Length: 450
Image (tube, rainbow, N blue to C red):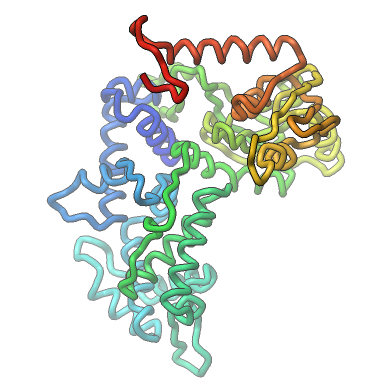
């Protein structure tokens, strides 16, 4: 699938998750900056991919797509990004051929000519049949990817599936490994490679007819399903950073009415795009665990030096010119100075925040203090007694640290600055108003029940 088309699918799926299908076809098309006809082609393409990936019956063309969007608290569903990665660069004939090669090599060791014969018999009639050169190229690709391996011995060379590690595990060990990878893929970032590994382990468990999940052990969900789609850009950005190359892209702000801009070749159908064409030198990426957002930090000559972009707004990402190492290090040093006191990426005026945290009453472990020490970054505890402790930190602005402080609830009291204290008092009063009784004559007990 072409890169531009992949951008379109990413934005489409993100909107589908965030809006729960509340938009009609015209609203989706307007938001994407495409025609309704292109929207219909896109949804058909996604349904075809979903049907191929999940191998749904022909009489259920919409079920595969619906299954991907269905929320279940008893299973960690495959993320939408993994679904796109599977189909991004493979033609339909390649998808069938590679899947067939891997499947036959799971059962026995075969030569390239034997594999060619099996592929010729197993590929549907409507798809083009491969030749020996194509099969040899596929085998080389799969060997480089670590999926298969060549057996020792003379010619003709034989190949087999490279799954010795998994095959040597007992059923219990394989189940434990799957459970571990499942937890890590759902809780760590970046997570795409973990999902790919989890998918392979799931297939191995199915071959042994083992339960293919840890639903009886773990119940958890990644709260921002749409944000994992941003990882599609992550490896392109990291590659550009390593190569010291600039990036060019169209950027759509979160407040923009559009999230995608199609490349129109016919001037009669050209549309005005709300996205800005940006060229910048990428320097860092940051991830906000609080809101599940990826950020790209770098240097843009068209802006006031250091620039920050939400990764969800990037489309048509491409590498451009190379910069020398001296220039790169100078720009990186400038970014480090500007973000020295950033809780995440805020580059506002530095302000000192002073907070009193209250120790949990009667608890065996002081989990409040443990969390502050773990997550408090460069802040320090300056005073403490049996009931509470004072915490101080200097940050660029208070907007990014506020959700963290709010998450402690009544165990946290902001002392300084006074503006932040007033903001939190106002927010807590608004929350308290939501829980006031509707009827005036209702008396609430100590536990909050009527």
